[in-house]
Image 1 (tube, rainbow, N blue to C red):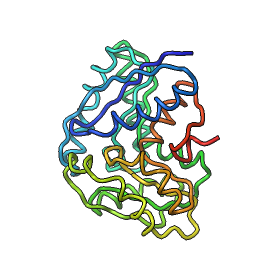
Image 2: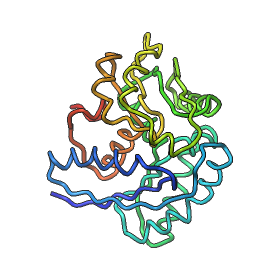
Image 3: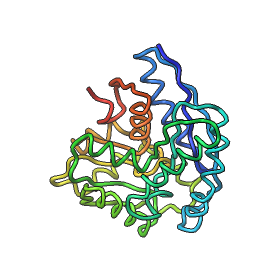
Image 4: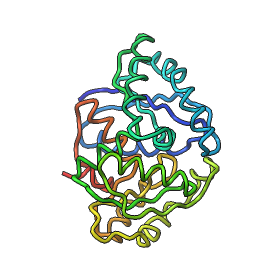
Length: 247
């Protein structure tokens, strides 16, 4: 058995990342006996607009320095669209920058991101074409789709729920997601991204959504949990957690 400290860099208005990622890792701990604790640092963002997302990114170094003081074993930048809205492939630059920031603050640690985790998870599954659901306004959803496609995964269809207030995103009813997923065009796709956002609740909806679409289902939160475990060098299959947590 091992003990790990997981650091989360989250938007100030996020209410979901600190529940769904810990829940997935709680399921893992129930199998492996490992122990995970969670430690967060916040960056100001209330409305999901390009301006607030850019300001939050600019504040991420300060938040990383504070989180480094907790001597975490891995640090996850837990906001997908904040990174993807900045331009193609930028997750690599941001992860590298925050890794250096944490090291300079005295805590050499692997920094992963939800944006990079989703892309890596889709490649791990061998997905070449996906359909996605986002809570964003349509222009931001288009940026997310373009980002994923630039990473070599075609986005066949996208549904935007068009909720701009980030607190309202966290209050969306995830029991509606299977029905929404059923409205996606999934002809010929390899997987469905049930929530291309760490703030939109989705974990409990995964089993029902997989039955509706009859395809592997991934969410940004499950991809982030999977990437955190990969950074720690551990992983185990757990039920009801989507395609990345099967055998």
